[in-house]
Structure formats: structure tokens, C-alpha cells
Image (cartoon, rainbow, N blue to C red; front, side, top):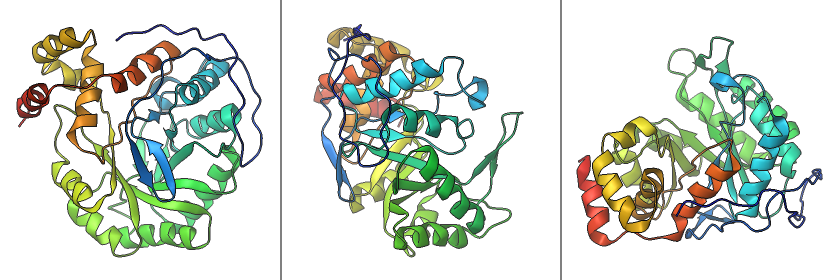
Length: 312
């Protein structure tokens, strides 16, 4: 299933609902996203998305060395049929959002999700900061960088346990939705109890927690999402160290599908639950195509069962 696309042919223009982006060459002869679809609010997206955290410098600080390549990756993802892109104001900070806005503007047929609630420093730390005034300010900066009038999906990045009550932070997101600044609200890095508390204040469209073949720590949260029809966005969906824990099994199944470990890991997530929306990230167009290729084959029932039982 590994593929190599022609990255240098010209793709068609995208319908824009916000400010227009500058077009540059990307592949028109690429592999296509064939994952099932899921509804986030009024938007229907393919379940296999793209995580844009890696469109930054080292340690997710600053801009990447090759900004045009980063923009090309975003355009190439859309060209491959990816219509769910996930980012955050803390990626860079600001760099990832800016590059997405410059690459594609605000197309009607792509849902761009972003997050607020973390501060960064040059040491690479991720510092929780859920102050409502800060959240509201960050929404304005995200609107500008993403070149849009409304944020499609705005997620609370991480609870601020020390300084700001969880309900106060979530209330800021709810108010932004009421005011039309954001269309949908999501939460990230939450327990089942925090998810319930958030849902008491605002309709939660998605949850973004760490989850993959080896790390099932958020299984209870996923079960709630499954029952309630809430989108579950697993971050670190194909973490190399986690996949290595089951390397022999993954290699055996991958060989049956002419695939890679990571493709099998993504295929398992797509089979695991209809609400799971994997967002594998990369800064390389060829790796992007390899990820999208995971949507083009199905695992047998016994393969899914063996993988599921591997970390139970």
C-alpha cells in the first residue's frame, strides 16, 4: 500500500468561504481518501483526517525550515480528499494555523479544527492556561491566522487544573459558540467525569484524547463518545513506540495487505469505532499519501480481533 505520488502537477482551485489563498502546484494524481464519513455539527467529513502539529520547527516551536513545503503538504492533503484538518494555536505557537490559512484559506468543503488553552516557551513546555479572557483573545488570533470569519471546531486543549475552574474555561467556549465566533465546541485531554461536566454547559461535538493500538487509557471516554455519537479524535494515533510494542503482529498483518505497520494501526482505528477520527500528522507529502492509503483496505474480522486483544 505504500505509494509515491507526483507532487508537482497542478490541482484545481477550491471553493473559498473566507479570504482567498495563493495557489501553488500540488498533486492532481494522488491517492484518494476512502474512509467513511462522520458528521460534526452541520459538516460531513471523511473520518481519516490530517494533524498539522508537525508543520512547525523543532520541538513544535517556531516555523518550519521550508514553509512552502509545509503549505504544499496542507494543499496535498486536501487534494487527497482529506477534509478534516486539526491544528492548535500552540503549535509553533501560531505557525501551524498561519500556514494552513496561507495554504488553503477557508474552503467550504474542509473543516479546520483548532484548539486553545496551552501556552508555550522556548524550552518546549506545554503550560495549561484556561483563563476565559485568554481563550476569547486566542479565538480572535486564530480567526486571523486561519483567514476565516468563523472557527469550524474550537477545542479546549487541556484543563487548567491549578488556576482556572474547568467550568469557567468551558463557559468561554460556549459563549463563543453562542456569539457565532465558532460553529462547534470540542474538548481535549479529558476524563469521563470532565466530559460529563463539559456537556452540562455546551454541546460537545468532539473529544481529542490520546489513544492508539497500545494506549487504551481513554477507553471509557471513547465508550461514552460511541454511545452518544460524539466524534473521538485520537492524538498520537500511530506513535512509533506504541506500535513497536506489537511489532511482530503488525508486521504479520501488514504483509497480508502489502501495507506498513502504521497503515495497519490506522486501519485498526477506523475499524475500532465509527466515531473515531484519526488525524495522523506529517510534514512530508509522500508520508501523507501513505497515511491516506490506510483508508483503502479493510482488515479481516479476525485481524481486528487479534489487534484489539493485543493490548487488552
